[in-house]
Length: 116
Image (cartoon, rainbow, N blue to C red; front, side, top):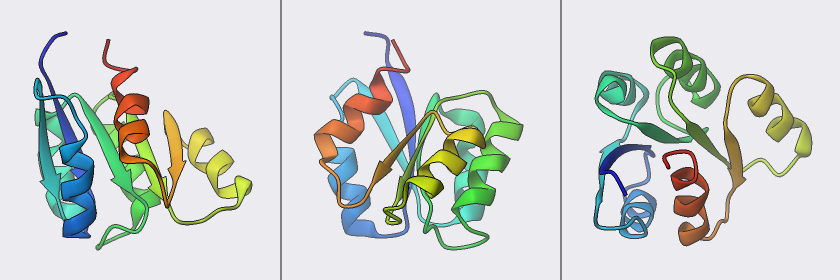
């Protein structure tokens, strides 16, 4: 597998560490804890896991900004359990949507399938 770099846009430090720990060793993970930091790192990554609760301007605007800057896979994390939100995110360009709580191994596998 080719080495990839994944951005984890998550403002909860513990959750970001759990997500990072579940990626294979040949995947480099970088973490951004707020909206501005995440946007600043988009050009250097191959894919993004983006929390919709990210500090700053909000997750939905983060998804739109990422997709405008670079055509890369984005998996959105949301604590909203309604299917309407998941459908909205998919229509707005998310490649996948995972609801919290989630299995971190499943999350990494969902993202990695876009990088093969």
